[in-house]
Structure formats: C-alpha cells, structure tokens
Length: 199
Image (cartoon, rainbow, N blue to C red; front, side, top):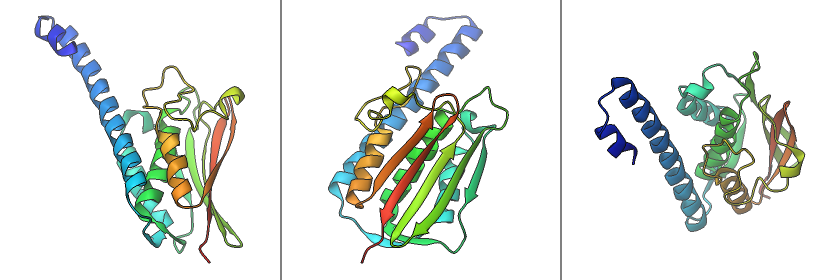
C-alpha cells in the first residue's frame, strides 16, 4: 500500500515520509521473521552445551544493537568478569541475552538523561544468575504475569512482534533455567536469568 501511494506522489517530502514508513515496516517484518526462526530452531534443535565466555557474548550482542537510533543515548554497562565461562547452549543463550537487551533498548525512557542498560553475573553454589537491568519505561504490575505469553505486548506503541519474551521463556525451558521479573512503571526493569549448572 505504501509503495502504491509513493508511486502516485510527486512531492519529494511526501516520498521521504513514505520511505521512512516503509523502512519501519521492513524492520518490523525482519524482527518478526527472526523471532519465528529463533522459535523454530529452539523447538527443533537438540541442546548442545559448550563453554561460553559471557562478557564476549554480551559485547557481541551490543555491537549488533548499538547503532540503532533507539540505542543512541544509552550507556551499556557489562559488569561481568572476563574469566567467566558458562557451560550452556551458545545459540540459545545468545537468543536469550539478545532479546532481553533489545527489549531494554526498545522500551528505554527518552525523558531520562542517564539512560542505561547493565548486565551483571553472579554464581551461587551450582546456579548462575545473569541480570539485565535498565532504567527504562518499566512495566505496569498488572502485566507482570502476562509478558511471557505469546504475542502479548504491554505497550500499545510497541513495534515488536510480542514473541521475544515468549521465546526467552521457551529457550530457558530447554536449558532447565528460569527467569524472574522485577519492574516498576516509570522506574525501570530487571530480568534475572537463572541457569543451573550441570552435575
């Protein structure tokens, strides 16, 4: 529809506006296809465990996201020691971390001057805790028990597919892990990924 409208438009400013709208739609479709692919892979592929250097993975994920317009003013902090390795499925762990960070980018708070996303790691006994914390928009309490549902979007203005957190939950089930949410509307959000170590 946007292509047809653009073909009938002579005004260069209108053409630019329609191209911008097309770009947004293409990005949305790209994200949706990526989510569906991640979901399909998670259901189809066996768990393949290997040592994963967590700080390197976090840097790789941020490198793929930091040039998006939404990430421009966000201070990304990785508080993970360089010598931390987790034995896990590398692809699934990347999907989990990537979805949580991209969500934090998508729902950051433009009104705040000190926007940040912080990744931290902690080990307690035979359990690893990976936290993704932000001071973004936050999530209203009434949505806390729904955000991991398929296609659920807590924000009506969201451009996401509503699959990201559902895929995170599904991937963690494959890894025998869990995820916890702490969030206050207008303050920020913390997701804690809990991964048990193999015996």
